[in-house]
Amino acid sequence: MADDPYKYQFGFGNHHATEAIPGALPASGTNLPQKVRYGLYAEHLNGTSFISSRESVSNLWMYRERPGAPHRPLRQVREHNEIETCFLPTNPNVSFTPQAYTWGPLPAPKTNPSRRGGNTTFVQGLKTIGGYGDATLKEGLAVHQYAFNADMNRQAFVNHDGDLLLVPQQGVLDIKTELGNLRIKPGMISVFPAGIRFSISIVPSPSQPNPPSHAVGYALEVFGTRFTLPELGVLGANGLAHVRDFEYPVAAFDLEPPGMLPPFEVTVKLGGRLFSYAQPHTPFNVVAWHGRHAPFRYDLARFAHLSANTDQLDPTAYCVLMAPSKWPGVSVVEFCVFGEKWAVARDTLRIPYYHRTMATEMCGVIKGVYQGSVRPLEGGGLSFEQSYMPHGESYEAYAREREAKHETVKVAQGFMSFMIHVPAHLGLTKWAMENHPDIRPERPGLWDSFHGHLLDHIDDANASLSKAGMPTLQIRPLTPPESPTGSILPEQDCESGLGDVPMNEQ
Image 1 (cartoon, rainbow, N blue to C red):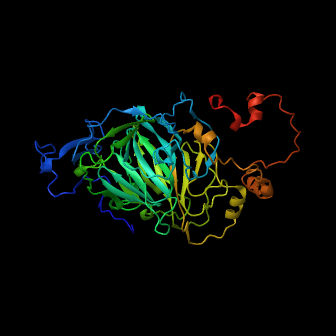
Image 2 (cartoon, helix red, strand yellow; image 1 turned 30 degrees about the vertical axis):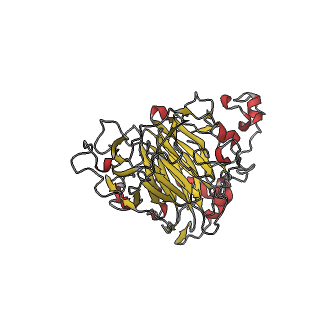
Image 3 (tube, rainbow, N blue to C red; image 1 turned 60 degrees about the vertical axis):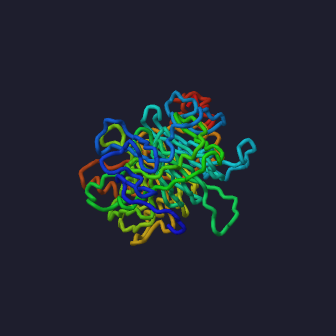
């Protein structure tokens, strides 16, 4: 990545080892020497239970100028926020609905005099759209949008609820973590394991030396599990995301003179609630570390897309990362990416076909122009289709595609989007359904143009039936049915429309 001042280590899931000062890591064979060189403190971070398979163990040894334990008492952050991590039906701020939703991107935050500096940091700009499960049960996930315009100066954030995957859509992010630095631009993703403290700043644009910078994007959070690569199966050794393309930070630390700088504020997210504490020293003081429980980044442009000669591939053929559930062979979520690829299939539909699936789908646009015909969606926006609900492209798009002359062509040039594929029902937050600044209802009359074509081919169908010795189709005049005398639902609910039903009555 151009203009990236940082160095990286490579290899997904590797046990990495790095030191900013030579000799800071203890000699092989011990993690906890009686005296760590340079007067450093050893600190262990375990991301999995003590009794875990060797394959699943995720832990970390850090050697730092001061440990994380010394800090002042915690306090709960009283400022109202729109973060949720409990998606059980008992939560009045969450509702399960079969209705499709589309949201536009979050706008640039406005100045808020009640906040320090008047602007919005990443933590303050994080808004939950929906999810399932509960972070306290270590099962499920949450989907967020974010928009912020302020750097986290002498502030850090640590998520105790789960691993966090960031998808920038606007704004280059400079991210300082306990283990080193990452720079993330739109078209990349980054993952931060639970328990890792980090701070996010916006990189100024070279073309605008003093811009009113703000950043927009998405976040996917998983509870009680970790992101991993999907199995390649019959693909063999190659395809999808390559292990070597995942980049991890090298050790880097801040050396601060004692008592010369203001305290550092650390914000903790636990059970969807925010807490904070002050400490007299920077948390970014790790001189050396080794282990697997580390943040990383990945450039989505390096993803190896697959092509099909006949029918379409399922969206999971474009899976970058997935998170396994407690059920063998079942995932909590798959994160899929759609970018430039060659379309070669003949005599088949190339647009999304009409389908119903037990998985919930949420889609967002990272860059380029969205070509779907059903909903208005642009970079930073998000769409939602609940599990089992039928969906697909409009009749007009279907009619054009049905008659299209297919040639081999590169599609999605300059375009990149993603899908969060969840094999569960997702609950939407009250904020997403009622208070999001850009809710886009389904276009009235969208599906009215659909009509069946079988009657246009009745002679051909009857010829086939006769040849097979089967009764032919007969078109008989039908007596108009009587007006319905009742309704499945109470009359007032049918007339009011789903959008007007209070959340606790849906």
